[in-house]
Length: 464
Image 1: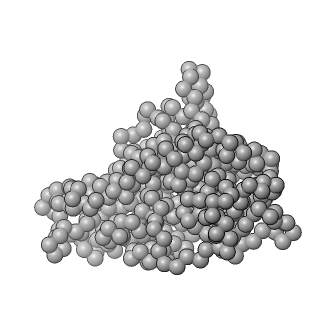
Image 2 (image 1 turned 60 degrees about the vertical axis):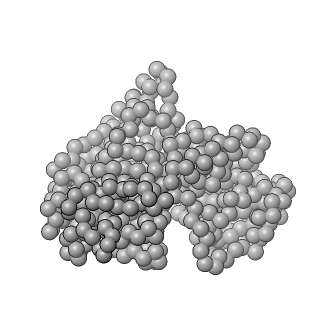
Image 3 (image 1 turned 135 degrees about the horizontal axis):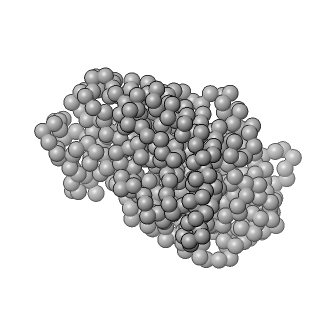
């Protein structure tokens, strides 16, 4: 269904006989788990006729140009910072280091790029409205929302739409703090535990991050900034509207979510365009003769001893299964001394969206992108993760009923095989996954985003 746009006031400008859609400045962190989902939204909006400028890392500029957008550069994470992060063992220290260097301090590192982009766009046409579409953890737009001076030539800042593509991380009385990997507990005793955990994190390492964030925001002129209990409250609240790009059933139920925070759902898988290079074993995948188990670790984790190798080992004797592993990096291979079982196929890089429709179980390290891929396709999951948000993602999968949470980032072959056996032997996981898939399809995520843009731009969206 198309959306026509009429002006809410006389300030709306015409181009030919039609009112122009507002221009969009997209901003996203230069990492695949952050920029990738936002790129998908941007490409869909470009197809609807929106003029798009996109501020992110160089690795994503080709994709932006391909859909007709204009890429603008922000620097990638410094190699020495990433090297230090990768050598740290999983745990709170590693999480705090990543939060500080990748997100909190990057607000100051990239803020000038946001200002430069807006000033350039305004100089090109000061009468053409702009809406910022921001990945919520891209912190360099937050000062603008929090009272920093507007860009040169602009009387006020543009409206800011947040796209939230990670779990809900702001403080809630109904959940444990982000990072603990614990499910909500609504009993009286459970609520006391959750409150105690919130106090503990506020007065612990996360409190130090709030102090660093306050210093950064002060330097950037964010006169309306106030230190919340958690840096994540600032991330979520520093937008005029926030859309969580998942269906509600993929998130915990909370009674105190801000009014500006809404669920939009996830864009449906894109249609296949152009020539696709299918693996030589593709007929085995599509034949339906064996149930397909997909083992993946995303594009960042390259230690295949974490998920992929133990999954292959644990399922090696299952002649009734076809185990497929996507390594996530072009040119990647498994160790030369690893003997591949007869029921296993491996490919370096391939689209999840193409193989998931044929997949019975996905085994992965509980990255949020993988989780949402499973949700969108109605595929139940076995989840094992220890770093970043992975314990929280795995717990959401367990809570939603779409998978088995192994509650470890170092699963054994036996644990992984048992997780697969549980899912294949109990139809409740597939039934729940399909129910959430249907819920997501009915939400029409791109239409929700489009309407939010028009609302923020002061235009009236009319369904045609």
